[in-house]
Image (cartoon, rainbow over all chains, first blue to last red; front, side, top):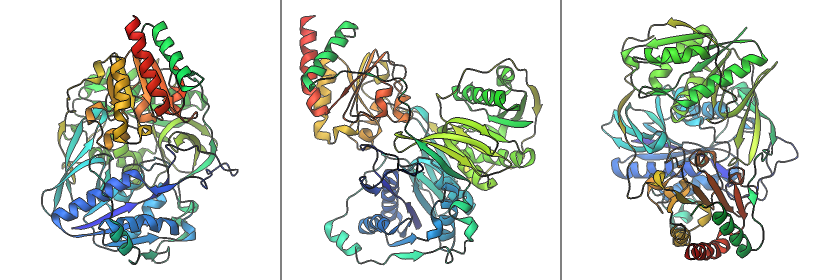
Length: 263
Length: 326
């Protein structure tokens, strides 16, 4: 089985304070920590499990700066076989449609059966790249995928989440793009030894001309959408904040619960 | 005159609420710039929906065929692709639902048309539509502009619509299914219902939800003790069930359960949109979070900005004392 995993390095903003940069179209990223996108990490694990089960090789692909090679090396340390970084100054400003086009150009030149992506990125959360990649390659896809069963070398059974905790099952012809949901496997950790070994592995670099893409197919000029302005959301309705020391705040909350007759 | 198409989302014999919201968005846009609203009804045996949709659109396009029975984005795409190409509506509004997420991006890429997903607001400017969406864990808003195109595709988040639409009387046009052979690339097999666990959090009066802020599984008893003192049950946001610290049936939100509790206490939960949709029906919402800018505080009635590890122990004690005295 030829397996491809698309990975993205993203800032962790869930537990951090986020500030808009003076440009007004980006955030200040200096004080943020970066790591592999959470859903991509689950996608990578699904790929590793698949390889263990049916054999084959895993190729990792990322589009990003030199620092995103950390993400590729983490994947190599966990058991992926090859890693590719798509890098070109002209890729700057690419929207999801352009990113999908660039990824498709890189994938088209090699064999592939199953392509994994995360179902959403923690930064923009558009949930577009996976299914757009499938459309670029002219193959099927499923997003919010939770479970994969290989039936034979032609088709797979895929379950995906639907609203309210249920699932939908599909039979899909290979090749396929699966945008994986979080939480349905347990992403492994790589051993120190394997991380050291992965540090010496080669990462293939591909630029725009090697991908045979025209300048107007990538970056801002190859994009359909761009951020015009970022803003801090108006808080609108705001909770009544119970102030004081933890004890005082707890006391106030107990008072509210009593007053409202909740218990 | 501009033409706004709205894709009707329905499931198991019922039109989903998000459809009415999309129609309301369309009506609001049509007030600003004169536009004709077309509702697109696709499925098998969908006649029963026609009457309820008519007051909300000028035109209703119905594609009713046994081949369109299953909820399969690949099948919908095979219907929509030629239809959009031929009719070139200015806007196509779809739901940012699990179905819309499976459908819209590949539809847009196949047609090479601009797409904004998960928009919370939409305006029409002379340069084209401008959509607003939330990024970076909901902490930043973004106004997104789109390149000039014949058709723009937008998926809209639930719970964002203005006042409901109505007062129209759509003409009904039936169209044939554009393909004769079933789509074989992706075939719908079955629906698997949500698992049922030992505790039904949807029926509980008091629910304490725990999120990423709890940091380690070993810290869960701290929250469990608060839930017990309150006589409530323990629930969780996605990161906690993803990590396997609590079973999936305790997950609150769009991919989990919808609560209708008298009181919901969110502990260490930032308040992503996906979580918040599950708690909107709770009477009183309390949030405990260390980040004063966490979106959960805009949903809560009462908030404590602080370290949950410092706030929870005294809170549990005060609740116990309150219970003992009553």
